[in-house]
Length: 484
Image 1 (spheres, rainbow, N blue to C red):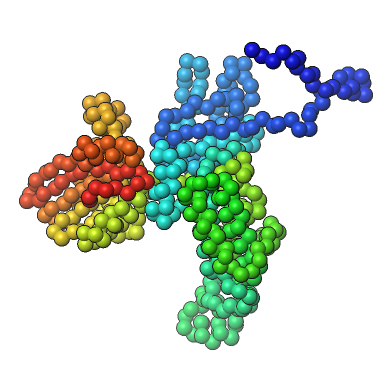
Image 2 (cartoon, rainbow, N blue to C red):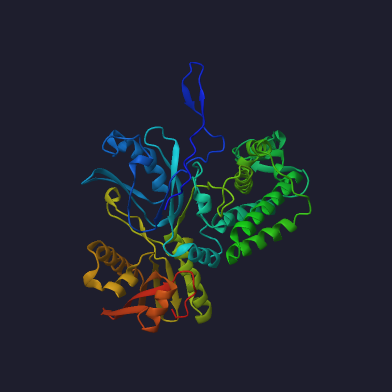
């Protein structure tokens, strides 16, 4: 039953002409900008035109559908999302198809191009699973911050450690490169800086043919003692956010301890850096030091109150994280442990150790330049090839069977198998095992492992070679107890 109290009419005042006008309440809450939620590789979502375009008679997009696509397709592409315009029974519709990234980007109006909403793509293995994998890999696949406006409402959607970890990493890198007190630095540069040492240049560089190398003497601003105080302020600010917003989350607490450790290594008192001070150092010195530039940018986010997630700010930074890359690094870390135990020799594709160039007879029509398995392990007389696939094929095969898989799933799985067989042909070895490694939820992995279905194998004997093809599942975020 509704309330019996009659509604209170909004206050009105008279204009000079005697007509009544509505008075807006100074403390009236503003309508929050919409935040769309999707899941990586999940179901597409139809965008509501009323949120991003002016009202139309048919409640559709009208002539603004192309404007919405143009305004947002570049940002969505950075998040590996695809826009599709299709005809539906109710008229033209815009769908957003999520891909293999997690993160957040702003969405713009089809008419004004102003930010009127946001999109967050959640990981299908939950934030906690991604956090465990990031920790296992030493945060090697840290999120990439995007040069975009803040994402409305995302500050309370993303756990604080997702974005706080890269900030702590940048400040730690900056701290290691910063030294106490000003000092002059002499270095050979391609771009002039400070004072060029002309006697040194004319006497030694020109005579030896190194005319492009300019000996310069300049003040090393990264050694400014204020910089260490700024770093300490930034670390303490992030630690406060992690403790306040992270609660009992073990990852947030671990990062808070790391921020505390770094802050305590700085004897100087913390100092709040003004935006003017940061910009001054950026203009003069940051171009010559990657660590300084990245660290100053992280400090700028904190100064500007940009949301690092967890609830202090409503809005958050735009960012993206490649989950296929994260899965590859995680599988590599798991296999590296096995290699140490079994005495195997491991080669990783992301380090450029497994590249096989393809030499085309007509370079003008070549399709790809090389093949590169994700992981290769040599163990005695056996060669093991692993390709990490951030897909749900193994779980789908177990749940539905091959006959009930969709045509798209089947084609994708066939492509994976053909790729694995192509990798096996690269090596001259009598016994080769090539494995496609798929992620599974820990509960699904345990269920399959107890039934002996976490690994499926097929053997092929050809030309005196023994080739084994395996489909293997690993729990996403929980180290496997099964052998390699």
